[in-house]
Image 1 (spheres, one colour):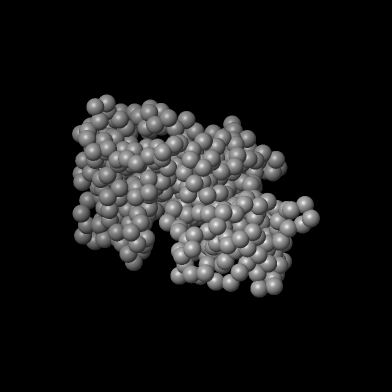
Image 2: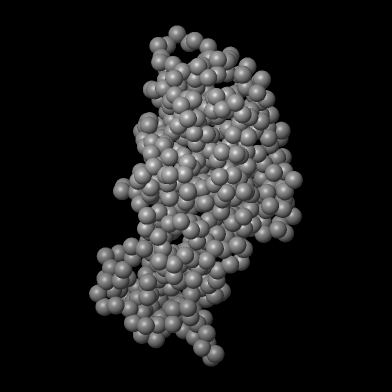
Length: 482
C-alpha cells in the first residue's frame, strides 16, 4: 500500500488546527473540511458534530463542533461517543464471516439450520430458503422491523430475545428471496444470532473478544455506555419543531436488535476501523499470523452481492456500496433516535472518513462530501502562468457581504486561494479559485482554468487585510482562519 511520506500529527482535541504540511494537499484539503464542518454545524443548528479522517495507515485529523451535553457546556471532539445504530451491522457481518472461515457457517444454507425458530409464516408465493447471504445483502425479503414500534418514542420498546422470536415466527415475508432490496434490521439480527449460536458464545462476548479487542477499538461497544451520557456519550435530540426547539430524547437499549442497531463508537474509532479494512485489502498473501479476517474474506464481503436499482440498494455482505463514476464508497450509515453516523472508505485513495451528529440530519452525503473536498485539493492545478509568491495566510478567513450569502471562507490552496460560500451541502461543486498576480492582487479563475477579472484585497493602517473587493463589491473580513 502507498503510505504518506511522513505521518501527519493525530489531533486529540477539538481546538487542534489542521495537521502540519507533511502532505500540503492533504493539509489544505483538511483545513477546508474543517471550515465547512464548522459552518454546517453552526448554520444547521446541529447540537453536535464530529468528523475524523484517515489516510493510508494513519488517523490524520479529527475535530468536534457543538456540545455533547444537554446544557451545552461540554464540547464535542473526535472522541465523542455516539450511537452508531446500523453501522453495527458491519461488526455483525464480520462475526458471521469469522464463523464462515472456521467452517461453522455456510452462506447459502437456510438460516433455520442454525436458528430453527427463525421460520417465517408461509405466504403462498414460491421462494428459495432465507440464507445468510440473502440476509446480509438485504435481499431475503424478511420484514424490516418487528411489530412493537421500537423506533417510536418516548420509550423505544425494543424487543427481548423471546419477543423477537415471537415476532419472527408470526411474520410473513415481504418478498420472495432474491427478488427485491428490502433493508432489514431483523435480517442482520438473525445473522448475528446465527454467528453466536454456532460459536457457543453470547453475541456481545463474540464481538468484543474476537473483533473489537483485536482491532484496538476501545471506544466501540455493543451497547450505549449510559454511565458516560452527557460527558463522553452525546445526548440524543429530536428534530427541530416549528418553534425552532428540540426535545431531549430518552436513551434506548436495542436489546435483541443489538446485532443490527445497538453499538456505539467515536469518529476516531470508526476511522481506525476503516483503516484496518484498507490495510487488509492491500495484502495479497495469507497472513502468517491469523487476524480478525483473511484479506480474501473482506474482499468477498465488499464485492457486490445484490443490487436493486429501482430501490437504490447495492450491498455486499453487510457492507453498503455506492458507485459515483470511477469512485467506489464502501461502508455503512446509521440512524437511531437522536443520532446519525456514517463511515465510508475509498480504496482508490486509501482514505477513511467518519461523520457523526446528534441531529436528524443524515450524514452519508456529508461523508461523501469530505472525500470530495480532499479530492478537489489533490486534483487541483492552476493553468497558464503559475501563481506568484504571496502571503496567503494574510487573506485566510471568513468574509461577509450581509447580502448574498451567510459567509465566504477563503483559504490557501495550491499556491493560491480557494473561496466558497457557506453553508453549502455540496461545497466541492462550488469552489472558486484566486491566483495571485501581485501584492494583494489576484485573478478569479474560470471553470475552464483560464484567468478572469482582477480581485483585490485592502489592508488597514496596521497592514491587516480587512476586505476583498470584486466588481466594486466589498466583502468584510470578520475573522481570521483557524
